[in-house]
Length: 356
Image (cartoon, rainbow, N blue to C red; front, side, top):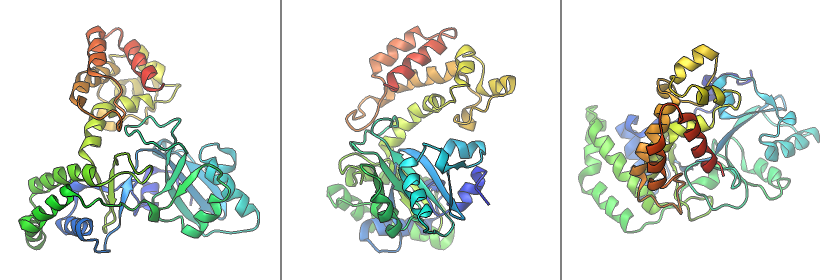
C-alpha cells in the first residue's frame, strides 16, 4: 500500500533519522554503545550526521514513483505522482527515465534531506554552492545512486554511507575520553546492570556531548560548517543535536513554523493576531499543519513577542555559521513597537527580512 499517513511513514522508515528517539529517552545500554563507538570506533553502531534541510520522500511501488514532502505526510495527503511533480524532480526524473528504459527496482522508500543554497532558510549557513540530496535511510544502494548521479548534472547525491561522521581527535575529544574512562562509563554500566536509570545523569551527559560535537565535527556537506546533530544507529535510533543548534532552534522555531504556514491560511493569522491558533483552526476550518501541537494554544501576537524577547539569548552566536535572523538591537526596536493591533505587520517585517 502507498504511504498515506505520517504514522505509516514512520513505520516504513523506522530505521531512519526521521523520527528517532531523544537522547534523554535512550537506554543506558544504547548510550554506552554510542559513546564507545564515538571514542573507540568499535564498528558496532553507525553514527551519521543529521541535517537541517527540506525533506523529500520517494516511494517506488511496482515501478511507479511517488513523492511527498514532510508537511504533506503530516497532513495525510496522498502521494503525488513523481512524473507530475517538480518537487524532487532532480532525482525522480532520472529514476523514471531509467525505469521507462525497461529496468526494475524492488519496492522501497527513500528519505532525503535537500540542501539548496538558494532556498535554505534553516539555521545553519551551509557553504554548499550546489543543491545536495542526502538519502539518510540507507535504502538507496550505492550502485543505484551511481546510476542516478550520471543524470543529475550539477546536483549532488549522498548516500547514508557517505554521511558517516569524521571525528577530529583534538583536545576536546581527549578530554572527554579521559572523563568517560575515569568513571563516567562505570556509572552508566551500573545503570544498565541494575535498571536504576538516573535521568539527571543522562541529561548531564547530553549537555557534555552536545558541546563536544561542535568541537570535534564539521558537516560532510562542505567540511567547514557546524552540524545540526547526529543520528545514532542503535537498535532504536537516537538523535542528539548540538547545544548551539538547539539554542537557536528554541528561539526561532515557533515563529519559523508560522513562516511555513500555507499561503491560503497565513492571512487569517495576520488578520486575527490575538486569537490562538487552535481557535482559528476551529473558526475558519484551517489546518495549520506546520505549527507544532504544543504551540497551537498561542496566538501570532504571543509568538512574535516570544521571539523578539528571546532573541537576546542568541547574542554571541557565530553568525558566519548560524542563521540568526535579527540582531538584538533590531529585535528590541521591533519589540518596542509591537502591540496587539500591529502584530500582523510586525510579523510580516520579520518574514520579509528572513526570506530575503
